[in-house]
Image 1 (tube, rainbow, N blue to C red):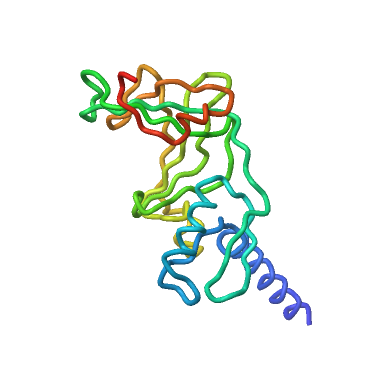
Image 2 (cartoon, rainbow, N blue to C red):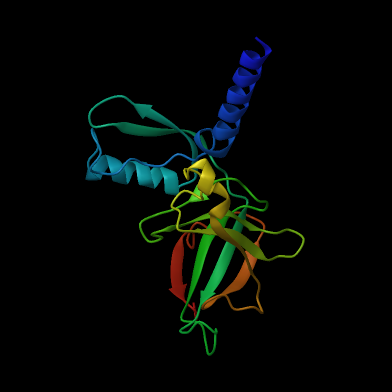
Length: 194
């Protein structure tokens, strides 16, 4: 009997371990436009909510599915990245990209069609250093969340720090502001002269 209990306990421990590593961790991801009860219009609606910082979604069981945001993220910082013509950041920047972010690390995962086979987590401006941080996951569109448990440790990720005097593959930090972005520049790319 003790052997049966021991086997049950080890099975339970394995299931808890599995849950922690895969099934219980994960961020909301919009279903593909080709999924059942999905189309281009409601996929675009879902992506717009996701990109606007929606933290919790309500999904209305209809066909096509409808989405609403029940809890919105509130960004408290604004980052400007300078984009250079080469990966060494030589010469003048071609443009500035300004978008909302946070002032401390978060567990949210960012992925869109432009970031095929990679995802980004913990995008934030550090209040102590004024630098912008992000963790990039290569080969994963969900920050390594849905890999089988035996591949969990093989997820390749890289912590990247953007500073005003350091070039990261053609990008350099313009500035981190610890207030929400000006609504005119929110999510915009502008020429470096503007």
